[in-house]
Image: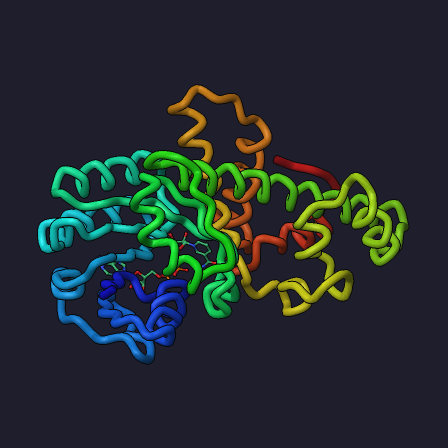
Length: 292
Ligand code: NAD
């Protein structure tokens, strides 16, 4: 199976390298980043996909995905599969899948969870929308790049799962950070706070696996001066996507809306840009109260 890979940034480069290391012929293209080791360089996006059985994209947003898809879909072999792993809006995912199917191709939206560490280690989780048949063809590649792939439903279902998951993550991270800031003001030791909450009903991935307090819990970006990790602006991107989806689907998501507003304030008007999304804790700590 030959693979075309477009978008070789922080996530795409290690994912493509893992496929090449597993013995696949991978041809890659990126407008800026160099090809990682083992990946054959293409001069143009269309050249990366011409002979490919599966084309994987890992791009910044839905607009860029749509533009890349319209360049490469006409160059792909009939019967090949277009598999987008970027995090984008549900509508872009569905439009691109429709365009691919109209050209006689398979199509999957397969966003990931696990970050750059997961991409390097090949331990990502894939949440996948599209047909069962296309999922079965690409599954061996998901197994190399990740540890789990869930077929969530038709086109767009992968992106829907991703933004719902990340809306929960944004909300629980803020709740965990504001609770630590309150605990500080009440004179509660942070380690004691962790010991109780991580084994009580307030536990979550944000507390137990990615604790925002330095020196407490497992090693996390908080122990590295809040260097990302998962940057606050990427969390803002995902919360914008979940609010956009909630609006178009008519779903009420007040906590998601508040989390979006807080991350927007943090990224656009405070010092959040370029910091890990768990740096909400020092943000709350330096304030007297909660100000959405
Ligand atoms: P990145 O900015 O490092 O990589 C994106 C790459 O796409 C860049 O190298 C850029 O040069 C390239 N690119 C842009 N326009 C292009 C075009 N027209 N043709 C070809 N290449 C083009 O971003 P990333 O961190 O690798 O994230 C990629 C996607 O994965 C995003 O949608 C992001 O939301 C998602 N994601 C990221 C993480 C993370 O922790 N970084 C985790 C999960 C999901």
